Image 1 (cartoon, rainbow, N blue to C red):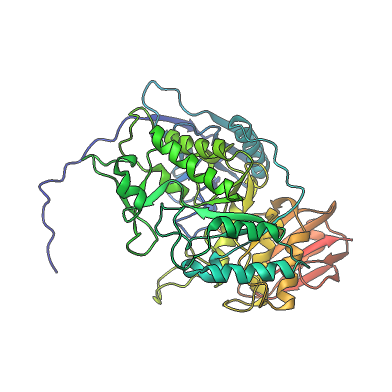
Image 2: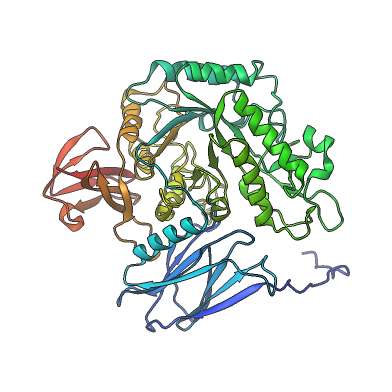
Length: 541
């Protein structure tokens, strides 16, 4: 084995001073409950968000907010950030034989600067604390009242064709969407990644898209649907025209060179650069792109890769932070198209508040229930793209539904073709649309089987209002969410176990006789028995 070599150029540097504080906890010695939050739709750990933090010497980081408490006595403490104008907020729960406290760090708040506002709540129900916190943060960040009276429906090209999508693929699906309005009627038809020449050159079309995007938007709107389009507005690749023409528009590294990051696109688009929104020219560029699309008839914008807009580096304004620069970019876009719908994807949640309408709250789904990964016996692919992972992360963000934005669980996977999941697993995917009220699909309505199309129809019509986890055992995912459907008491059930499960109605305060509405509607008495990887929507009669 080759020995390591001492690096002469390596110099440890002290971290920059920033705002830090500590909140002591006065909880029973038995307390181990911790709710860990992610500040974006991606999670790098496969564990559920509710932990039992035991042991002697442990720490657990949480973003934006955290809850620590004791299940036995029903004592819980929530600490959360109310604002994110200049910095994100990171909490760390500290255990030294018992839960001793919560430290807080705001990395871009310098000593003497006003920190982002914080809130501490105590109470007997951690779920209620999270709802109170969500409402308070939304108010502080200027979120306008959210109209969630109707479910959002739509079609996007990505999860059927991915980046190989052609203009013909879109137009064939548009014809199917136009002729198949019952039981699923898409409100939006959104072109996803694959139409542009390079990442960053959003107004330039590749050869597989010969018809002008303006003409395509006209075809979509003439079919009675809203035209939508995908961009990554904060970014451009090193292969892009915009970078070659304006290399000074991008965040720099310590050497003054454009700061490149490795993106998910294949070469030559794999090296991404972050636009410096503190430059007036960049704000004008963003406004021009979105106003041009708007003039062509596009009113729904999926803005992907937003988290990469928080690049740490040198900007034109030395007083700007990654968060403040990010919000400048979003404000430029919002002001450019005030009447459009903005969907944030890969978003840092709090800096988006008040500036986007909808937000992805799940990791990427896929054509598979379990993520495909290396075939190693010790490989855990739960954080990879899959129906299961998207479902779980959507669950974790339940307290944001209709409070911070309309919450997008990623596309609902119902189809039987170009798919590698069961009918029951399709029901689980569709149920995430029913608990969030956002029901976009990539399924081909020209080839989808009638029973699978019926699932999409039920996602369009049904909504579990005020979805709340009935219980959330530590170190497990929740299976049952309570709420109402059309004013009737209801529960959404996700059997993500690998074995059959029985769910007794009286446990959830439901009457003996109920309707099951997710599958072919039926009457159930006292209980429902669900096979592994299946779902149900039980509604009181």
